Image (cartoon, rainbow, N blue to C red; front, side, top):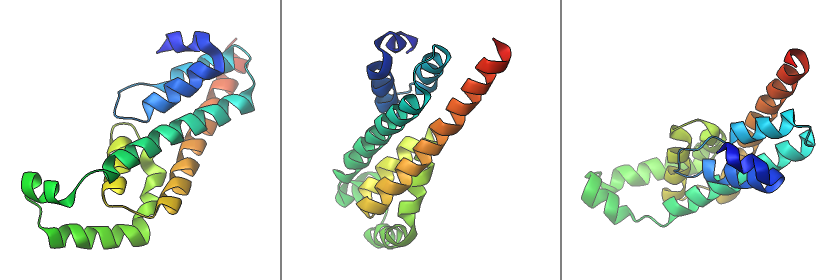
Length: 150
């Protein structure tokens, strides 16, 4: 993953995008390397946030392609339970997208929200805010550590 650092902003975008999919990658390493090497801080945060958000939305759309019949058949969950969950998530669940930045479960949240076809606009906004704040905090910690340690 650190090799993507050599591609600068494009490498950061790619690392951030791929890290938001079901691939187990860490874009924080690339973000930190760019910040430590004096790349523009605001540009790094923006590019990482947008790339990670786009990757998260691709997971959402992957879930959107799923069919309720598959869940009933393979996971043995009744259609009425799926419908109740969908109604609940349509009212408040889109805000759960804020937590798509979490390691491991974040990707599953995005896929589930897509599968349950939550409000795409609220989901997209919540997801972007969560991912942006994550990179903002990580970038700030990297910047401060770099200022005080080196």
